[in-house]
Image (cartoon, rainbow, N blue to C red; front, side):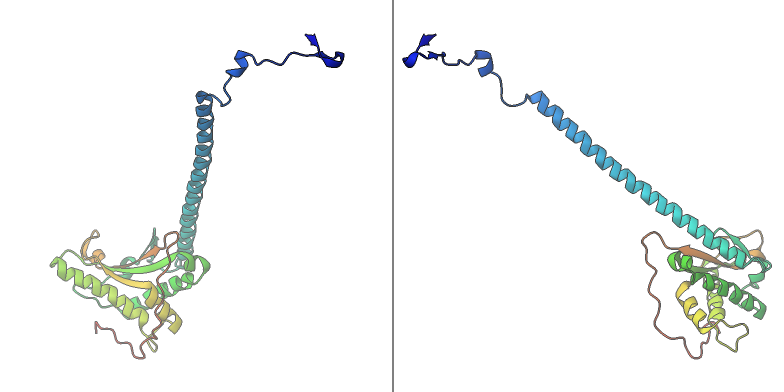
Length: 241
């Protein structure tokens, strides 16, 4: 160390050690990979939580739908509890012996027509409540035949039996116990005919010649088809007649 001008002591210039000069500025490759792995795990955890939440929400919606549909069917069961011979099985209205047909016939007796209108009136009533508007899609009228005769003949006969029920529901006054105009309009929108020939035979031929009502419900997010804007015919005549 030497004295400079003016007598001040001058310090030697600072020297950079070799170790400090060779120390890298950037983080090591292994540290970079570790950081990226942590970020990846965090992103995956967030994504899995979101997917799990969506699945859980979807399952809750499905469970709520089934619960509400079951409650709708319970209401229908209560509404038909006092009608002898009519049984609700799952989502099917079974009329038992009260809606059976003679062999090779699609005719209904006046008593059977009144019974079927009464059941339809209760279904239409429930179709107007909040659960019915939310979930009820349609009511399929299924006709059946026994095993005698050809398949296609019986298929046509079972369809005619379904159509006969629609004729009974859409019949206007002075038909006994006729539905109101509002009910007939709604029945035209909701009720659909179907024939099953002898694909669902019962224990006897008499039991096989029958009609049933099968209720179908909307899926989550599914919309009911728009209603018809056409008025009812002034003089409705059943084509089967």
